[in-house]
Image (cartoon, rainbow, N blue to C red; front, side, top):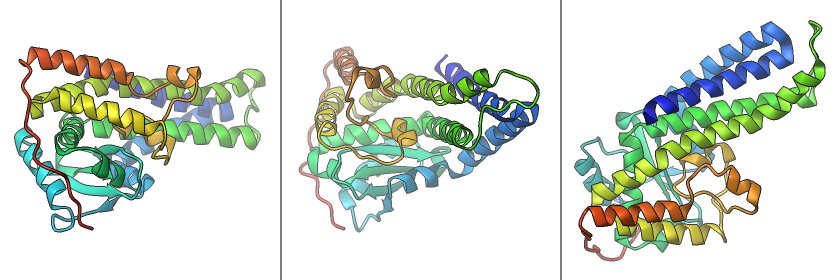
Length: 292
């Protein structure tokens, strides 16, 4: 059901792009929007990992540079029965992580320097397991496509607004056209949010089952939310759904349009899952070190 819902939302995003094109240039604009949606979806299929990694200036690291990080990703990948993804580190003191790639054979996991310094090993393992669950479920491709198309909608709307959008050469109402251009980015954000929310709870559950330690991820989410209030990772907002933790929510409107479920709800579900699993706890495996 979640997969069908996600496909429907992606189709809706592409439809919004077509509507914006029509509002700008009538039928020819709609055709352009349809072609742009196809190109953006195809481009995201092949280049989603590069776009996301570039957006956060992530740098690849070898097993020699980060042996414990590589070892942890390798162990979790073996448990999940997927190829080991490429490992990247984001040069930021903000604590966050994300995964990207079109499928498990072309995936990457990125963590910030800040999260490596902040989390103990069991909690970092929970975060990495969450990201690997996204890869297993192919959420990374879905979210990247959504981010790319939503970004295209926002860009096209801005260009139309500043360079004469809203003109309708075939006798339509220019006010309606202008309203479409202004509303489209908001609608795209809402749809992108819906796609992201359908995937986060599943990734949390997948991580808890992969590690056998739901509480570790719950504790990590609690720390990450507290850290995000004082330091945000920044970067292109279109890629925020890829992150394990949203940036700080500064007002009521931001909460309404959050791309992630409330952290409290995520923690509550994890603790309930812990009870269902019999309260199994994994042992910490020492402090985490990094050599760059």
